Structures are given as C-alpha cells and as structure tokens.
Amino acid sequence: MSELYRLIHVEKANHLIVLLCRVPHVTRSSYCAWREGEAACEVGSVTA
Image (cartoon, rainbow, N blue to C red; front, side, top):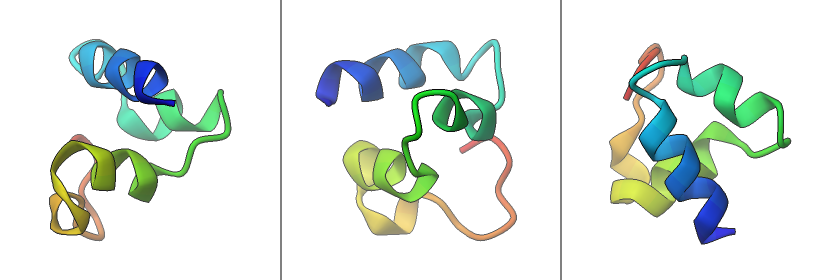
C-alpha cells in the first residue's frame, strides 16, 4: 500500500488528490494519515 501512497504523493502535482485516490479506491483520509498523520487533510482541502 505504501507504493500506492507514494505514487499519489508524486502525482498530486499534476492531478487532484481526490481523483488520485478515487481510481484505486483509496480513501483520501488514509492517504493523508500515511503522509503526515490525521491532521494533514482538513475538510475542504482540495490539494493537500
């Protein structure tokens, strides 16, 4: 799963995180928890 999160992290410069998470059925909150902890993604943040 970490490889998928790394891919999302790299591609967020080119695409919305919401779309990057939607395709492989990854929750945005799980990506954010992986990246920086649960406080990383706040409600309403489009590109974290």
